[in-house]
Length: 438
Image (cartoon, rainbow, N blue to C red; front, side, top):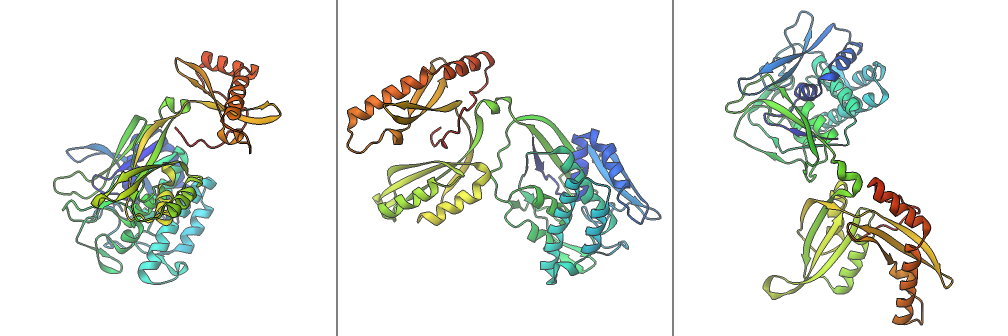
């Protein structure tokens, strides 16, 4: 499953928890049980409320402490504004509390990971060691609950991929225990480095440090935001501040992978650029380096005419979208290009297997593919046909014999027949070489 964050009003810890629970209400009892098992010294009451801002209906996650007003009901967008007497907690104390909590080991890892990002950002902002960081806003009870709640939900859902739309920057200033700070808060700005942001002209704190840490923990900066699959559910989490002309909500959209994915459907990253100032020898060496990278499926080179009538090479690279940043960096490292284009697209590959056959004492690998409406076809690996001193006729004869022998194999016939009956891809008999052509 993929869950996409749509920060219409912004992102905060309580909004994340509320939105995910709104989409997955069956997780509410488990989350509340986890909250009461945290072992906090103060009595804490957590609840999920149905909320409506007059435009959108959804959920709100409320945390209350004894003899205090609701903690999440502050003057500004999502987290504490310093107007209440929050507890100041050191990172080491928070870490110990989480490690001793009644949580699964994976949920603990998530909670510690999110808080660790916050600690690192706060340490950079104030120029102190991470061990000396004392959380004022984000370390208070409400934010501890928010982050542990988020960790519980992340663990419970076991999502394959989290993505986010561009995040609203907000503007103005916010009151904190450190005094008046600009928006986005310095820690928030550090945590959002590399993420797409925008300014819609609406002032206020739109993304809190807690919300930024959750986004940073779950999502990859600069990732191609392709939402694919079947939209199975969505949820809306409301914040506590009102913004002019927009609902202060975080929406989550849940996608289930298409059923065809097991039949060859997948996502593919395409990177394209032109080179006109690199020698043929150097460009060939660079493209070989790119081609041999594990994240790259194929490299295509096409002659082209560039600006000022210069002869150039158009390069197209097919790669794993999960390795987008690594592939882009590789292109800049191995070629002289100073700009490129990239996009994600859907692709499909026919099921295939590789058989190794022996012809005239030679081992030849043969790739077998079943084409819809045609049947099985075979293609001998060109490298296995090369022999010093042999000409085209000898290679062609070896190729024909190897492909015919592979197609006549009883095992291949059984596998193809089974696939026709079950409509499942052919199971690999042996590990096939990495395919470059789709």
